[in-house]
Amino acid sequence: MRKTYLLRVAYFCFFAATLTFITSCQSFYKVSKTPVATAHTDSLVTANPQRYFVLRSGTSPGKAYHMSNMVVSPDKRSITCMLDSLEPEHQLHLKNGRGGNMRYKINKPEKAVLDEIHLYIANDDAIVAGSNYTLALDKVQKIEVLEKNKGKTTTSWVLGSIGYTVGAIVVVAVIIAATKSSCPFVSAYDGNEMSLQGEIYGGAIYPQLCRNDFIKLKMAPAKTNTLQLQISNELKEKQFTDLAELMVVTHDKDVTVMTDEQGNLYSISNPQIPVAATASGRDVLPLLLYQKDDQTYNFNDTALNNGSNNLQLTFTKPSSAANAKLVLRLKNSYWLDLAYGKMTEGFGSYYPSFIKQQYKKPVEDLKRWTNAQQIPLSISVQTPQGWQKQQQLTTFGPVATREIVVPIDLTGINSKTVTLELSSGFMFWEIDYAAVDFSAETPLLVTRLLPIKATDETGSNVMPALEKEDNAFLEQPVPGNAAIIEYAYTPLKDTAKTQTFILHAKGYYEHVRDYKNKPDIAFLEQFKKPGALSTYSLNLYKEAMQADLQAMANK
Image 1 (cartoon, rainbow, N blue to C red):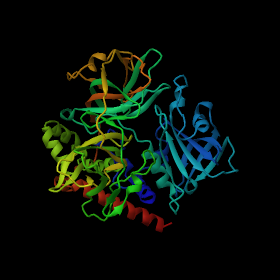
Image 2 (spheres, rainbow, N blue to C red; image 1 turned 60 degrees about the vertical axis):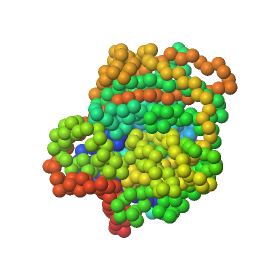
Image 3 (cartoon, rainbow, N blue to C red; image 1 turned 90 degrees about the horizontal axis):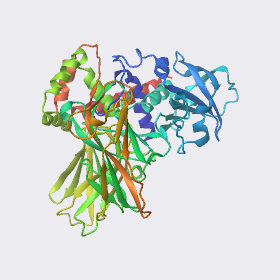
Image 4 (cartoon, one colour; image 1 turned 135 degrees about the vertical axis):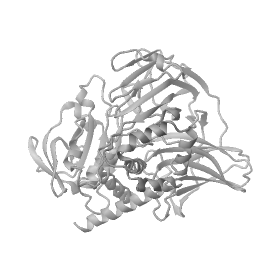
């Protein structure tokens, strides 16, 4: 699993210069027809001045140095850089460690909240601060990324266990993949800082796709007895938000509150893991048992010619159960963004005209194509009459995993077990955890809060745009636009209860793309067929594996 994942991450680098996205709001690079050849590797690791590279030598906690003036060698096997001592504001992660409290304090200098990329190697006694250093990239054992507004590492890859020299392509690709951003960003004050919590209305890239979205937040009141969150634009996108309502749910401490895609609330008190989980006859249950363990099922069976992948989950069912709550922790993959971006590259300079045409299409037409390409995650239940579809989950992006409930109708299923099937295109989704809860709903007290204050990055009042659904949008057309939103809050006095906070937002966003190549009509014709994007995704992946194996053979 780890090896094949790194192979596809390597391919991500080959096409990093071509990325555009529909399923989430992502940064993008200028189109290049030739993989790697026209993308300068040294610029890939230094192009973003907001990235701060740290070399970690040894363990517990080892030594750490700032890497500057980084240049990749012509043979792409090493990086030459200047090593300097870390400034105090960049030593937070050293003291607290992965999984600890690595929060940047609000009163720290701005440079303290730059994205940090930590490269881990074994102890090297030859390192001297203040001198040049050559890092052999096959010595990199792990990469961790810390992003501003995040209270934990964005992601982590262990590279040393895959059995061969990974080289610069994989190392740089991991850095690119790890620091991808999504929009609109939602951050919330958690008692220490504004920590990034996720993204909203992913995939709603046309005005007619404007939709409601619900995201669970970790929040704590500020000293002013207000709850605070931020909606921001970090990329070359245009964002439009119509509503920012905060739902405060009071409930018993022994239950977890989640929503389904429509915002309906559910109490989860007795989640049961599957007794079996298979994909094409392969046991994948270990990938789904634990939350937040970096083990995911990725819908990546290459033996299927069309790329369509199915995951079957079997659960023990109480005889009296008429309904069930499927609990999922999941996200979209960066690979989906890559495959879709390669497709849209085919429009070339015609892309703006294509988008204008899309703006005129009915919602039903847009969704019909998306569904035919197997982009949503389809959930079905096995009944005596066959598979019955329960729901299709809309994409919500690859940056942050999301917990969501899918209600399951068990009418007519009298067996002692129930089997669910999750279906999607090739490597479009990543499932971290799956369980089913058959328990009855417990009482939930819901308070809906509207903003009492909302100001943008200039200090202007933007509250009228966020108070109600009226098509009067908060417009955030350029990167750096950010709105701080505050809600009046009365602290909970009942010590037997706890509270869950859920943002109900509504909006859409628009891509900013500037392709220069000529349209490739023959290439685009294939995507008129159902399932074509999944097949294309599979073929891209196979090309990636072949290219990487060939590169290793040539070493």
